[in-house]
Image (cartoon, helix red, strand yellow):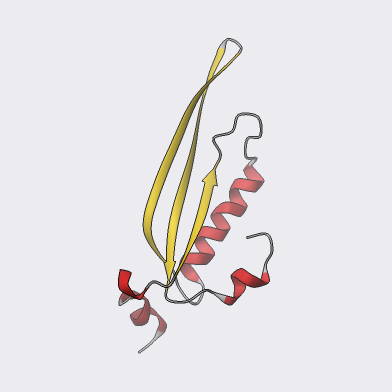
Length: 97
């Protein structure tokens, strides 16, 4: 059985580790820069493509509407819940995740 076949057979009962990956921000005082958002997306892609390959088992969308002076600002953060059959070693190696 190769890695792709093994990943497709991952069911919710096989999930032993869940990583929450946030993309975006809903804090108007510290918005996410493009560079930070790219890093967030890189982490999500790594969770879904590196070994052991994760699977999205849930998604939360949080939105906020803020009044800043005369302007209204709408912000959004998406939290992906990525399930793994075991905790990836590369998550413990990198302190930034």
